[in-house]
Figure 1 (tube, rainbow, N blue to C red):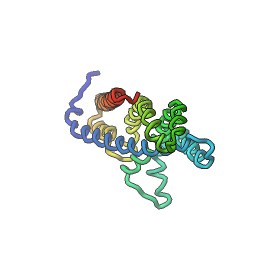
Figure 2 (figure 1 turned 90 degrees about the vertical axis):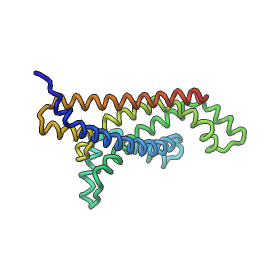
Figure 3 (figure 1 turned 90 degrees about the horizontal axis):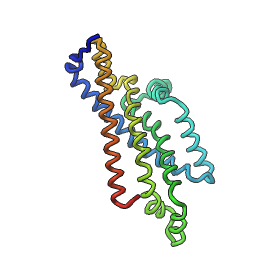
Figure 4 (figure 1 turned 180 degrees about the vertical axis):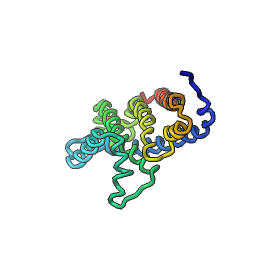
Length: 221
């Protein structure tokens, strides 16, 4: 079978528009996921705070134990049963952000716990408050250790963003499916879509590796 990429060339503007929407949704989800992940990760550091630890652990367990697609459908199709209606774009960002937050929280918790406890004990022995010691000593070291796993999470989020097309969001996948519906050249269009996702994920990985090197050069590792 001969490949015919002419529908891809003819619809490149739609694919570019879809790629931009994909970037916007993913960027919003990353910001939200990092904020949620930081709060939840800090909440899971001390099991002695039973209420906070229990709630944050329940959140992580539920979100990680259910598919992202189901969570997106709950936001977009489920909430209207209670009279709560959000735009598809909002549901996509919030649904993906909450999903990502559970994974980011484990990255945050693991990175902070990997820092030698002796450093916190030394800071406390010098009279430094706990929050100050966390902010000035522990978190900067943990931040560098978070970058590689965060990079993997961000890349996974870019790929998972293809699911928001099922919420009628005009992302890359949605625009590609529109081209397929008129051209019937599914293989060529999906190859083009795969290439765009490949570029986006590799650019993200490159950016994070650059940040990691700069932080290392700044003496945080």
